[in-house]
Image (cartoon, rainbow, N blue to C red; front, side, top):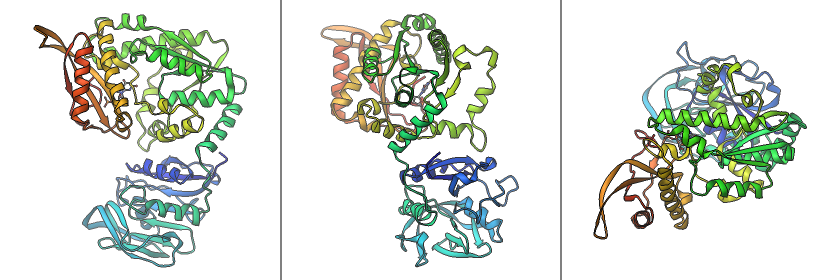
Length: 511
Ligand code: XMP
C-alpha cells in the first residue's frame, strides 16, 4: 500500500466502522484490525486509533492487548474504551461513573493553545456513551477538555503523541469530531490526505496487474453496483482476460436482462449473457417454502455458473465484489459468520469455479466509496445509483410458489412502481423499493363485473445498510397515481396496498 495508512484497533464497538468512514472522508486511508490480531507490519502505519468497546476495562475478559510497540512509538488516539484502557494500564484510575453518561454533552473546558484542539471551542457538542469513567489520569497525563459531568473528557500524555478522548468523534452528533480527527491525523501525526477515488483506481489497477498478470479471471455480474465496479476495475487492469458471466435467472426486473447486458457491452466488458430462466423456473416449480426457494435458486446458479466458467479455458481466478463491511465482519473481534460459513464447505465437494483463486478488488472499501470509485471511472450515474436487489430476485417477492405468469405480473407492477419513482424524482430519495405479489385474491369490481384477482403490496424503505430500515412516507398523490396505473394496466391485479412496517420488527423483503 503506497498510501499513508492509519491503523484502527477494534475493541468491538458498534461505532468502529464509523471511525473508518470519518477517516476516509478526510481522504486518508485506514484499516480496521481486531485488537487481538495487531498487524506485524506496524511500520506501514503512520498513526493508530483505539476504538470503543462494550466491555469494562475492569473486567478480566475485557480486551487488554499489549500496546508496548505502539504507545509512545506511534501517534496514538484512544477513543472511549480506548481512553479508559490507556488510563487503566498507565497508572490512572477507571471506575463506574455515578451518573449515566449517554448522549449529547457540551465541552465546558477546553485547554488553550493545544494543536489537538485547534478550532474546537468551549460549548462544542460531543457524544458520550459509557458507564465507566476516568477518575484519575495516567502518569504524565495532562487534562485537555471536560464536560459538566465528565472531568477527564480529553487528555494527552506528556512527551508523547498520545491523545485520548472519552467521547466519540466519529458520530455525527459530535459536531467537531471530524475536526478533531483531522487535528490528530494531519497536524499531529502528519498523515497525507491523498486517498481519493482516483488514487484508489490507480493503485488497485496496478495491484491487479501485478497479482493476476496474464491469467484469465472469471466474474459473475449481477447488474448491481459492486460487481459492476469490480468488473470495470479488472477490465482496466487486464482487458479481455476478464471473462464476465451475466445469468438471467428469470427472476430479474422487467427487461433488466437485455437492458443491463446492452449496458455492459457498451462499457466494453467481455461479457457472456446466459439465459437460464427455464432452468430456474423448472427447479422452483411447486416450491413455496422461502428457504427451499432460496436453496433451489442457489443450486441452479452454481450449476449454471460452473458450466459457463468451465468453458473459459485456463481460467485461474474468480473475482468477487466483496466490500469492506463483509471483510470486517468476517475478521471481527468475535469472529463473524463468514468464518463459520466457510468452515462448513468440504473443499473436495466444491464446484470447479470455487476452486479458483479469489481476487476481490473492492475488499477494502465501503459501499459509498464503491460508488465514488465507479463515478471516477465514468460508470453511468443511473447504474451506480441503482437500489439493492436481492440475488434470488423476484422469487422472494412472490409469496408462495412461483409460475411464469406470476413473474410476469410482478415484473409489470414493479416496473410501474419503479419508473413512477424515477419520473417523480423520488427514486434517489429511497434506499430500496419493490413490489410484492401476495398469495391471496380479493374481490373487486371493474366496470359492471365482479373480479377476484391478485393483491400486490408496494414497499419503499430508507436505510443506510439494510440492517435497520423504515418505510418511506411517499406522497399520497404518488401512491394514488401508482395504484391507479397498476390496477388499470396490469391484468390480474385488482388491489394495491402499501407496507408501513419498519425493520425491525419486520424485514425489508417479505420472505
Ligand atoms: P431483509 O429482508 O433481511 O433484507 O430485511 C435486507 C437486505 O438484504 C437483501 N436480501 C437479500 N439479498 N440474497 C441477497 O442477495 C438474499 O437472499 C436476500 N434476502 C434479502 C434485501 O433485498 C435487503 O436489501
